[in-house]
Length: 192
Image (spheres, rainbow, N blue to C red):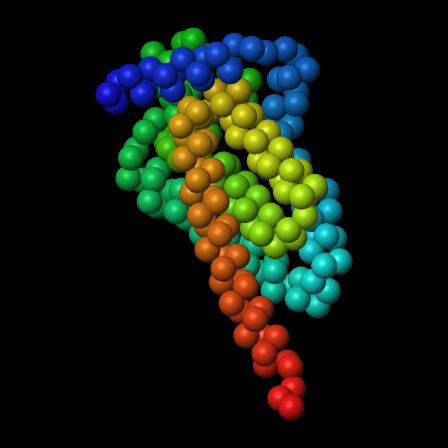
């Protein structure tokens, strides 16, 4: 059964990696970049400040907690446990991949890019609760994880599992934010 799942994973990777163009190569390298999204993050910060005013600092703190939780879980609970090589570190797989960027770390299950992106996706969706923001976040997160497979640095299962880790981390952090924000509100509300 594991071999069948692994074959499906490899075949999907090959299919995504082989459907390329010069334009798509540039888009996927851009999408996968770490500093690419600074303006997007500033836009999200603007939306948070607009809705939460002075509580935006608390929301940003819990976003940092969500991303830290997802990042640490992806490495300590998965990568360091499963030790699954990235496709670009497996000679039998790598020989059939188009590599556009470097490979990254040795192990890829689960994708930290996916976990961290979807921690932010989940938190922002729960925090802002606007349909257009939710759609924007889902499209953004999907672009990130697709780019990781397209570039040959992760298997599809790496990014899917990473996304799930991120959604859980984002949900936990939002729950903690909600509880904390509620307690702060009670302390600031005068008793009559």
